[in-house]
Length: 341
Ligand code: PHE
Image (cartoon, rainbow, N blue to C red; front, top):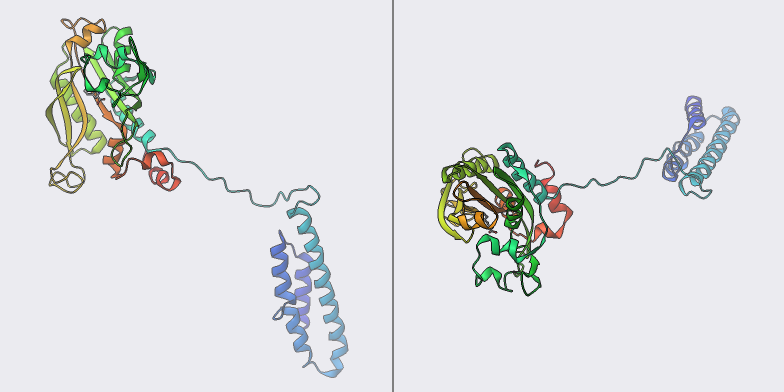
């Protein structure tokens, strides 16, 4: 018994507590119903009468020591943790600051841009509020083309050369051609705007990366090889591509590019709707009319252009089913892409 009393007394001398909870824990452990000191008082009943006097004194001293020590600790922790006197407990652990994560659209855009950077492309940017000339006119859109309709384009002003929100970043390619002499090799990432109802597959704001390569003797074979290389870097070395004939006012010939489905490997699944192929971009040889409108001699130079939606590439890469997720900024969704770059 003596040994236990000495042990507890020694412990009390050195007792420390960082907060009120720890003080309470100490109190319960020593003086609670089943506490160590309480138990000593129970054991005291069995002590022989001649020793009762000595142990009784010791036990009472121990209890007083414990009570006053706990009271002291309670006061000191109350001072520092409730900040009553304006002091702060510098020994408390700091508040946890939640780390943010990169947005999947930013991650995808950077992946696309960095693949083309390896092929010697630089980044060009331009205004989101554009004019008809840069978005449609110089890109060979006929005056009655449906894209020039209010239903597809957000207009800011009407009249001669209307001001509008760009519907594609091809306008940046026009601006680049207007101010630079070939060879030109640029990618144009940016936000674009189309007057569409918002659904799982469409949004009125989305992101594109378009590209342009103009030099002497650039051919369709160069386009095909560049796109194949991009697709293999982006979706894996086993990726195949196919090109379907298409139409854009600013390219001739024009093509729609598909990749072999990266989920089923081309066998057919519900992602590729059983076809084995997924559409990923439009492309083509720059129409001579466009080169001319931008001050480049089409007899001397040829080139190709391509354009893709960043949301779509990200959806295909990570099987995101609903486009709206990109815009809701739900931290649980965004965190899933933390380690993707
Ligand atoms: N500008 C087209 C679009 O917005 C994409 C495209 C770019 C197609 C270049 C062909 C060549 O959809």
